[in-house]
Amino acid sequence: MSDVTVAPPGVRRRRLRGLSAVVAALSLVTGVAMTALLPADAGTTPAGAVKAPAGLASLRWGACPSATDDARMRCATVRVPLDYRHPQRRAIDVMISRIPAAKPEQRQGAIILNGGGPGANLNIPLVASRLPDLADSYDLIGFDPRGTGHSTPMSCGRTRDELIRDEELELLAFPAADGSIGRNLGYAHRVARQCAAHSGDLLPYLNTADIARDLDRIRVALGEPTVSFYGQSWGTYLGAVYRTLFPSTIDRMVLDSAMDPGRIGYDEFRDFSAGMQDRWPDLADAAVDNAGTVGLGTTPTQVRRNYLALTSRLDRHPVRRDGTAAPVTGNLIRLLTRQYSLNANLADLLGLWAAAVRLDAGTATDADHALVETAATTFVTANLAPGVPDDNWLSIPWAVSCGDQAWPRDARTYARNTAADRSAHPLTAGAPANITPCAAWPVRPAAPATTVTSTGRRNVLILQNRRDPATPLRSAMGMRRALGTDAAFVDIDAGGHGVISQPQPNMCAVFTMHDFFMDGALPAADTTCQ
View: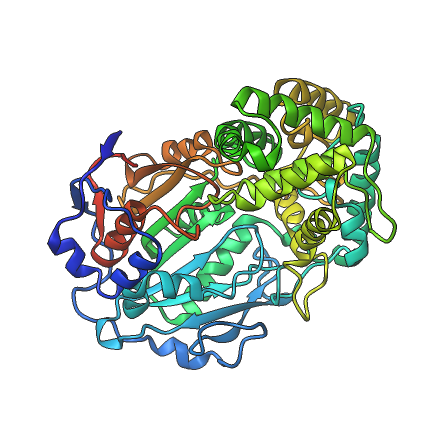
């Protein structure tokens, strides 16, 4: 990989009409870099403006069900087959959103956006505000994938209070303080039964391949011969599967924080241990820089040792307070540490650690208690939406992962792997290797997972932070290998999950994505943004 170190030339700055204000707001440093750019393989985007297709008129556009920061955004429902093997049978709803190109005379087409999860993705104004040139030239299309949000949502019937109670068993299945997984086993079987009882009719059809087929129904409903695509996290896998199934319909594709398409299901979850290991030096350095307030030590070695000791003590002696839904345990701190580590800015994490140190020492203030309790509750409630089952956002990732690939069914496999992972990666305490509802899922995958392959067209840009705790660098390299010469790879010397979605994104990466979507220009070789 070549390091990118020089500022973009004047002609490139001229193309970024309107981006200068965004650059200033995002505190652009002067060392933005670029490498030689080559055009991507020619797609179907003509040189002149592309008129809005007639298909848009056949959709019934109206107000969106959730609040949006852009008054131009409208929503519509696309009907898709529940079962693509029998498309004439039951249909379900997929809700889509659209912000039309602000300058129709410059319109280049439509970009479908997916922020990962899988989860609801209707609200997309962030992209419009961050990259105004794209908003000028493209319709921006969001959607709630089947089973999520306002798209015939699945539910396992779990309430808000139940989700808070089970918090440390949800996205990461933390074992007990002694490493045993009995509680996790009970949770896995209970949730699987609840999902079967409440959404058994949907479960066989919740998988990435069918969501990709829905994407093509969306494209057809929009009247677009081709679409471009931006996906983050799981959205990168969705995009790669869509491109494999419908190679002629993709113009340009950006994959931000990429999954390894060869490591899905249980293998993907197990990679979270490596991701946290990659991210940890950033966390430790931040704690050292704020040693006087955080209280975990003055060297990275001290911070790691004291953090592990702190979480171990809280496992054995949870801090309880009357009127709270759950005690503060080591696993809760590990879970919130992992969630806060997704952000490039670590201020929230440092506040959490400082409060946890005082809780453990018995010197916590009411503000410390409130901080941790609010963080724990917000983890569950931040994604709740009116008209959507409370558990939808936490249940759908299980449904899709279980539907993509069969997980091991033997509890002994998980006990053995959890013990090994707990020893090798104490920062995550064995959680990524532990048993989940997929071990007891009531339906098996309907078909083998799609094998992502090269299509022979160089029209994919992969953006990846080096120290991403959710989709680690080795995961993104797996996507790079699967796509071969179809893709250009840009790794960013930064931490956090998501390149473009960070409050202060790396501007070298922003410029690279901008030039690709606007002009079809890809880096000539794999590149590093400093």
